[in-house]
Length: 210
Picture 1: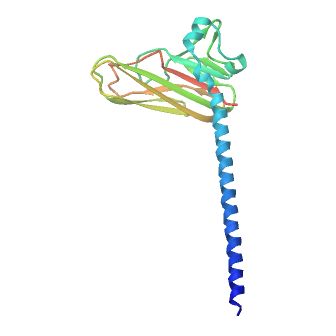
Picture 2: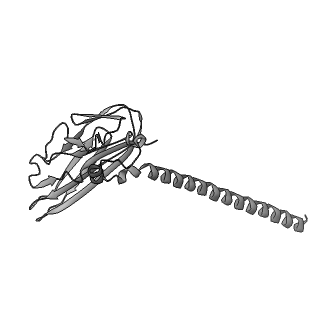
Picture 3: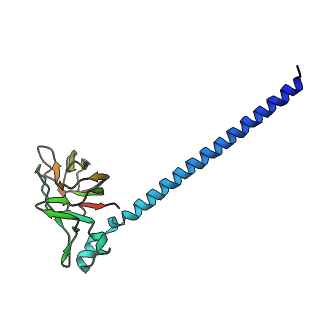
């Protein structure tokens, strides 16, 4: 038996195995990098579509001008909470923001009697923001706000002995059919007599993601 030949053959097999492993690692690295790059592009694209969230409603009300083209505004709706009372009602009271002769409910939506109807099937970005103020010696409690079956926002209010604000924002990205959305708040049986939900900073926003 030629020992030297066997050693050379073993070295060649080992070299081929090493080369295969190196190529496999490089391929895996390239694949992971491509997936990561694709994910970054998706995030960047989504962020660009979420720009309406920077909408300054107070400025819009004062100037009467929308900061985005009508084509974008038609895909967007924003409603403000219009009552500071805490009740387990069938629908929370909302109102659109009016600017000039228009309001913050695009043509892709219909708003009536505290119900927002979607006229288009699609992927929607929806968010709700809640701004609470303790007036004096408020007890800790938990409440929830539900927007149809699409979004549920739970809020934990702390035990505080002085005036304090609690801000909570919840959001979702989901596929929705043509439907009507109502928002319901669920509070403890004894209510929240010393907590107030501020109209300023409490609202519901939704828009279609292309």
